Image 1 (cartoon, one colour):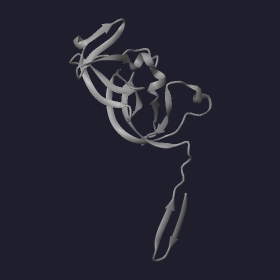
Image 2 (image 1 turned 60 degrees about the vertical axis):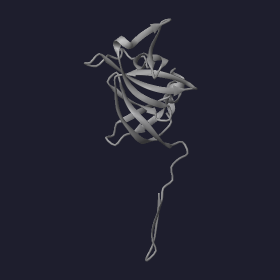
Image 3 (image 1 turned 90 degrees about the vertical axis):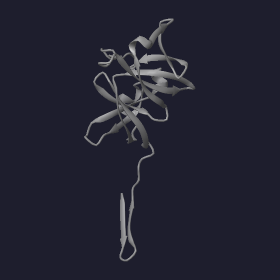
Image 4 (image 1 turned 90 degrees about the horizontal axis):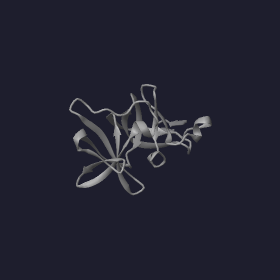
Length: 154
């Protein structure tokens, strides 16, 4: 950071961020009691689907959304968490509909949080080789948000 000031002309503040960082707009979702970020450029919509409207087709769970059959993936299973997503009190699942590599798919999550802008920093050191994550962000409360790389997870 550089700060310069001239009397009568004003103050100039110059911030330099490393190229390895970028500002990203992410949707926070809850998966297995943890919050994760999903890049908003992948998000199509968020929906709640009743359990009775989810069907198995060749061992793949699916739902009809907007007149199209959409394959569903449980985020807990993609992240190899111990617990699977559960329906809410109305027997509905929270589904994040995303577009990945030209295909529309639904990701079953435990819940939706908020959309925020974060400074995304790539994972470094021993964490750099972990598949499924595009980076991390430090939130205002001091917690770390891992941002998912859906292309690698699916």
